[in-house]
Image (cartoon, rainbow, N blue to C red; front, side, top):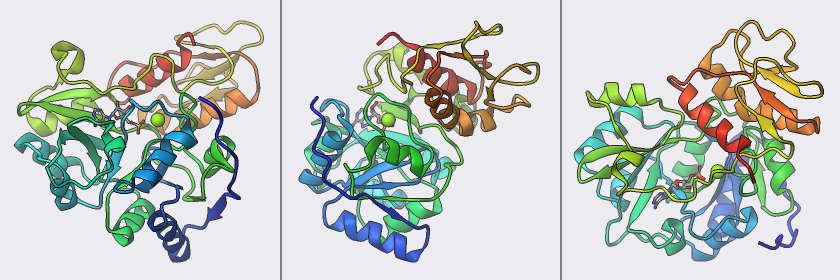
Length: 321
Ligand code: AMP
Ligand code: MG
């Protein structure tokens, strides 16, 4: 896709009432604003404004068939847009506000721009927990479409500086809320009939979902009916090649450690082996390693809890492109 014209003098908005008000004014005017959420920075636009939604795809270079998550202020606002089956309501009560996205059938009078769902009959909904995202959503008073605020396929942004490195000049503003506390994208759950299906691993672990539901979730691959498109094999990609499960790095590789015993690692996801810390640091560490311009090697991360989502992102970062 051609690079869009760099026409904005992207503003950096401060994390206060003035910054929130300016972000809301931009959204009302149909402009794009990057907002901090607890997962990653989102590239926000008025989800009811077709031009604003189209501008998200252009600014990111995002394929048109990759639909956007809609952010709302609470469960009532979500239910005004979609029919949430009972288990979806239970998950919403357990995890909203928070890093969980629910995919549910659109209501007839939803009012969203068609491109938000890429023409599909279901919409992905989330109530973010970050105080600045909440403040913007409450003051704006409508649904906000917001994919991650990075060029399509690149590493997700967990700081305002990451947003600017990828999108400066292409968006009106970024609201600077510091580092994102969860650091991984939301978990996506869809419903086949009423049965919950895990569509993307993310900031809420499958174990936590199973505990809230009283039963384990099926994985999307096991059903094949529901899909979350746009999850490409190569994604979150640093410029340099990346190898996984490395216990002995090769000469010249930047080694990213996890847990104790990685004394030679230049960077670490978590020195103590804490998966929440590793999730929060993952994209930041990848941005830092990428800036060094050498091949990257990552130590093994256990495939449990948040480790499932961390390994999912690492495998996509390592995939051939
Ligand atoms: P992100 O790029 O993190 O904002 O996540 C967006 C992802 O959510 C997409 O790539 C899809 O996998 C999924 N998604 C969003 N909206 C829909 C939808 N209407 N139907 C199916 N999947 C969706
Ligand atoms: Mg993304």
